[in-house]
Every structure is written in C-alpha cells, then in structure tokens.
Image 1 (cartoon, rainbow, N blue to C red):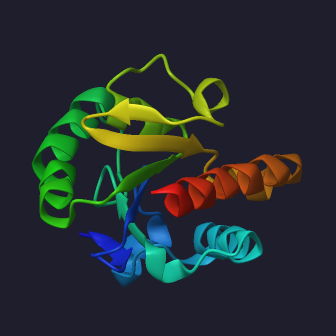
Image 2 (image 1 turned 180 degrees about the vertical axis):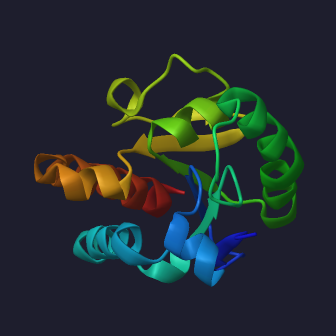
Image 3 (image 1 turned 45 degrees about the horizontal axis):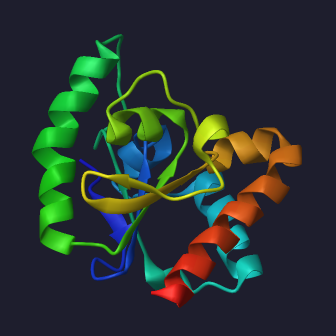
Length: 159
C-alpha cells in the first residue's frame, strides 16, 4: 500500500488516481515522471514542496480489470476520507480526470472543464489540474499546468 508522501501537516493535499507500477513495487510514493513534472512546476511557480502532501484515491496499482467506480468509491470512503479527517488540509488539488471524478463524485466531470477556478467539494476548497504524466506526454499542457500552480499559490497567499 502506498499511502502518500510529503508533509502530512501541509496546507495543500494533492490527490492522484493511483500509484504506478514503480511506486507500488518500491513502496515509495510519487516517483519518476509524475514527481519530476510536479516538482518542476511548483519550483517554477515559487512554491515550496513542504506545502504539499500527496496521496491517492487507490492506494495500490490495479493489477487486473476492475469496476473502477465501485473500487474508487470504496477506497475513497475508507482511506482517503480517513486521511482528510486526520490531516485536515486547507486546500485540495486534484490531478487528472480520475482524481477529479472520484473526489467530486461525478464521472462526467473533467479537468478541462473545471481547471482555472476554485470549487467547494466535500467541505474543501478544491481546484484541479492535468495529471503530471499527461503534461509530460503533451508538453503544450505545461503552460496550463503552471497557471494552475499559480492559482494554488495565489489562493494560499490570500488565506
């Protein structure tokens, strides 16, 4: 199980879909391209990585076909809700469509339609951004990713 990484007392909780094969195999959360892209963007935005705690909807990489909505709902209710209750972040940042759909509780939503603004979800000020691996695969998204990190920085500075 990969629970999360970073400062558990951080004001910002980042929610991703699930750990990748490498993270799951090594038991080390948030490695490889996802971490590199995310850290690069927060550094360029002038944010400190100690402001973030990163966790997942699913705490393990899925190994076979499964009912995604049911699995996400069970895992989110059991594990993520417990993390939210324990850590009580000020802000939530959902990265990628799977995290957005799971946290918002609506399989029809997507990053493209929600990014760039704040939403009140489950009692938390929440924003969204593209998944760092999507940004790596489509470099034209990096500018938007930086804009979303700047949105987080501005909100943090206002509060």
